[in-house]
Length: 236
Image (cartoon, rainbow, N blue to C red; front, side, top):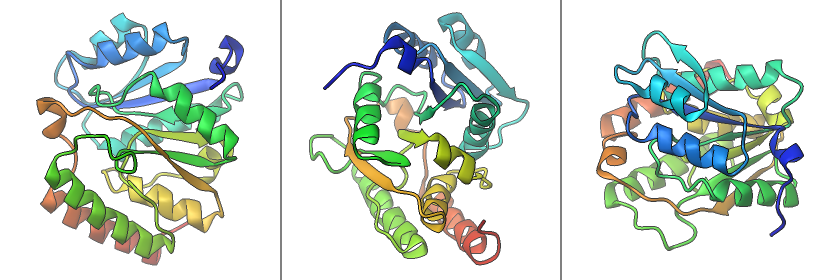
């Protein structure tokens, strides 16, 4: 794999939605800066801990929601900042709990460019090497089926938060769902706009803290009905 120059990395905005990730977000930000990504935006979604201070001390730019609105709302805030600057050409979204390997950002971006994709999804399941909790596997299979049914295309790991976006994708897709359902919303809208989605295997590591987050069964049911309503009445 080639290496992206500092000039190219300067055109990348890394958006990290965060809710109560004290003790983890600082390490993620520090690793990204050490790898040459100078534009790291942490969207603190109403954390009650010291996530914002930790991210600032590590060198990130911070935008803070006064209240907790959800991962979709936090990601939408980051994308709006991306749109307002003509400097940025690529957006990368990733989780702030440390489950994603920061060294994989370069790989994901390179595959994104080589495949001519508009959105590249970091796929936790296709490599077969990740140790993923059983309940996460079950939920993601169901989510992939529902997302595929609504978008008329099958996408593996539709709920992955590790993604690379072209500027075209950011400008075309307006995230309206505040919660985790935004992951599926993006896939559905990408199909609606004729955007190319690619899947690239990534590594992932789960901790006790990361297992406490994400979507459970009740949230999944709510996600489904929110998406159904969105697809039937609001898709644009």
